[in-house]
Image 1 (spheres, rainbow, N blue to C red):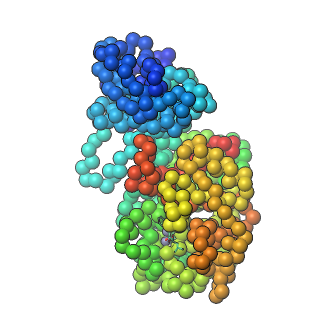
Image 2: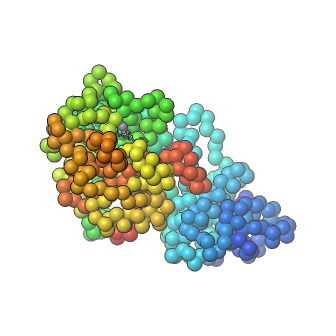
Image 3: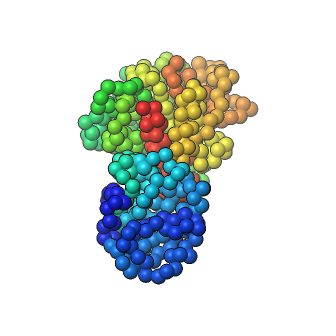
Length: 488
Ligand code: BES
Ligand code: ZN
Ligand code: ZN
């Protein structure tokens, strides 16, 4: 779907469907010259998510879609996203090729016309998502174009940003939903290289097993040992146009399939573990967005990518491996592999990049799904400022983030008997997500760091019209970009 932006001082172009929005108990705001064929519009409830299609008797639109925004006092940015998304979905189901949306004013609960533009544009783009990249004859989308009309040039600027964020989200969802045999570590790497080729400001380096060996990444290599697919470590770099205001690194778990290794997972829903690269997909998605948006930071993306399989050469429970920072690790459960690939990626980031801040994203623990469900990501951070900024970015994007605790006690609990560390703590300690974070904490030295456990939010969230359902959510992309926007 092509998306474009106009102001409400311009008359809506000829379209099949013109979406207009109404508060509960208030009349919808129609553009001048647009008239409905019946007077029934007066009875439209305006309830949040209410929809009604009318024939138009005059004006450039064949039909007019009324979308309810709910009570004026209850309006949120999220409701705007959902309303914009519903209009797109309705246009598709009405088999319309051309949709226009009419957003004449900035609601009181929205900070600016730019924020309105970002919200409705990102949601309009995200609502077009279809998981049909692997179907032989996917039905062609009916909706070809959407024009968003908003108050002014500020709206257009915000909407352009929304378009880039929405597209980056779709890109991430496609990576997540790709089956394990179609998206292997080497495919993650070529995807990253393609991103770099598309932007002058982005470069990409890919480490092969030989380079990993050279650097001493024994933990990452140990996870890949049971697979015929060689691992990759992707390192993307974004350089800002002007002077850099600082250096950040995003690190993402890129397990393209997690069978559990020798500590094999049960068969039921094992296929879900094709989503175990969602952290890495979010990092690549952030670079998809960086290619189109101006950000005044140097940003690095580090994605360790591997399969976790139970071959004869696989790492066995009890094996000891050595990470890049020299620490030895007793692998007591080969299914706690995310922390093993991440610890080398974090050690690499600290040593080679030396960023001001590291944020990692990982589908790390089933325990975070127990604790927080599918609507909130767990957040561990070494500074309250970073924690609070991520929570605020989560609120703004509705990619919600919730703080979880990490004590020195938990860090100590990951110390090993046979080796320096062990990759799982004892079960009587509980707090499984904290244990994962505590293990990672041994690899970040004194760099400011946050760990986002996205095992619940990466897929399986409730339907929110522009995202949700059983497939990948693209979580993390809009969150990271919002965090950067606020930091600048
Ligand atoms: N990829 C899984 C975590 C996961 C589980 C994500 C369910 C999404 C849904 C991870 O590698 C894993 O297997 N973690 C283990 C850790 C345990 C062995 C300490 C887990 O959570 O059970
Ligand atoms: Zn696992
Ligand atoms: Zn995993």
